Image 1 (tube, helix red, strand yellow):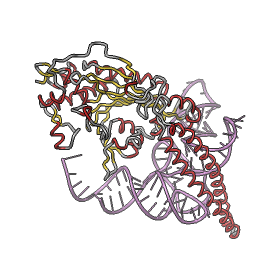
Image 2: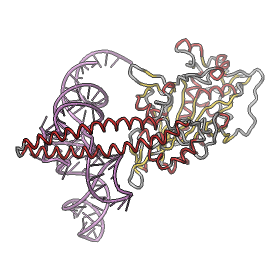
Image 3: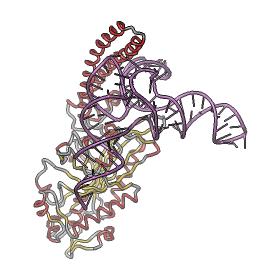
Image 4: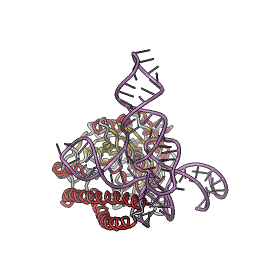
Length: 426
RNA sequence: GGAGAAUUGGCCGAGUGGCUUAAGGCGCACGCUUGGAAAGCGUGUAUACCUCAAAAGGGUAUCGAGGGUUCGAAUCCCUCAUUCUCCGCCA
């Protein structure tokens, strides 16, 4: 959520930057509308505060009148207060209404794209920030996609997942389950080495938390909702982990705050269909290790680069072909200012699969979270929040299985062997 | 799930309708004192918003949250949350 003060001071610059996104005329108009509503709010508050001050001072007088036994004066003063309060009540209703409309207006405004964000509307317009320099792996003609390999070596049972729950809930078994656990441990250990504190958060969150990181109201349909208790299954660890700092005031010396968490992620993926959803490419439940950083605004882009290097390092250790995309305005998430996606090449499908997304939200999340720090000037300012996947498992497994298949079986990358306890799946 | 008790500022803690501008203490900051420190003394020490060209100043709201009663609420009433104790259930 953007701050009204920013809309006021940087209105033209924001509208200009918005042109890189798919914003509508209505959204642009909303900027002026919110400012106008805020002007109204101020006028109403000024009037109402003056009325309340009057009520307070008259009430004090009434106390004195009673003490002195001046009952008639007290009675007429009471009448006066009643009149003032009647007017105040009207103003209070107005103010509430205006504030609701301001909040609704602000919720429709996406984050302002960073200078580096290329203009564009679709995936096609994303810029390749770093391309895979070497030749892409070529497999034998009889190379199998990962869902066939998973069945052949009894690693994942998609059918049992359907039986127990439904489509998109894979059941990992045997060495498949072990490989999954190995990757989780490997990712967590890498994050630990990079200085992230490990968190094991709740997997269900309340409405305030879903609202804090912006899942509500924007992406309501994407989350599973446990209606009896009004709790949401997390779509990413970002939600519980970032909400650790909701309504928190930090000291500038606390930065950077670096947190990592493994959690299963639950996504309804409403509206997806076709070959994209085959196998592990798109599922309702998958495992992911997330990294989150809270940082001083002056340093958040240094931190952003550090997070990119962290993700890149993991992919290199896994020996997977990858490329990094700088998302264009149209593909940029609602809350993000700058996002780089990591894709790995899945050689049998001959597809690039998104496995990580690293974003700087600047103050967009912290404004809604009320996540602030006490600055050098003694005043409170909004912190910057960033996060990234490091990494999302399901698609990494898909690429590993496909790329590493040989006539003897599927070889396990060197770094994972001490975690899996086996070198090859045969 | 049931019963009882509690929730006040950075922390402890007083406060049962106007004398609260939330006492007092601790902590913190600055000053005085000192050779230096401690002690002592003094001053200051929440947040958000409104007003003001700015600063100073003034105003409003906030005593777990939200409603209500009242001219006036930390104080009375209602709903909810959290914590503690006991009972029930449970890995």
